[in-house]
Length: 115
Image 1 (cartoon, rainbow, N blue to C red):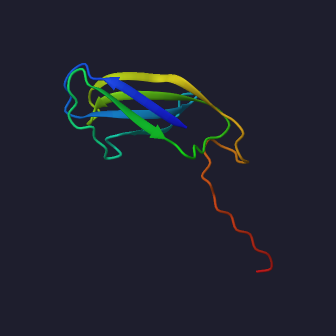
Image 2: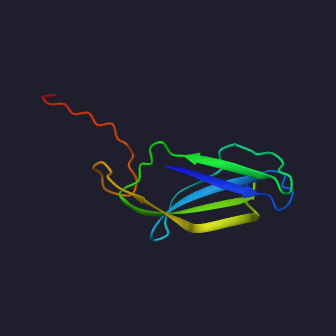
Image 3: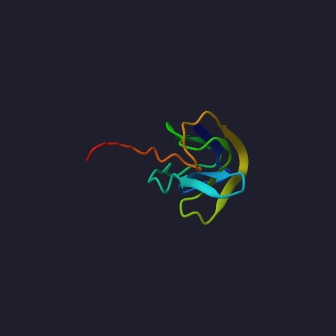
């Protein structure tokens, strides 16, 4: 899965952070991060400047079902939101290998006999 957040600064910002959250249909957050938590910074963004942030998940690991996605742009300290789309996108996960729950922890399983 890949999520792209594109934005345009309405004002000069010292260092905007871009965040992403994944929620169950019931609203339970199962994942959340932002560029600040990942030690990534766009640096100062000028008024009118456009920027994009790409979140890639090579192995999603979610159980089959539907999930809600939130995206937001805020100050690096998270105290001021510039824009937020809360649970505004839905994804559907299909054809997941055999496990129960919400998230596949990708266990490594070894079996022995006679020991």
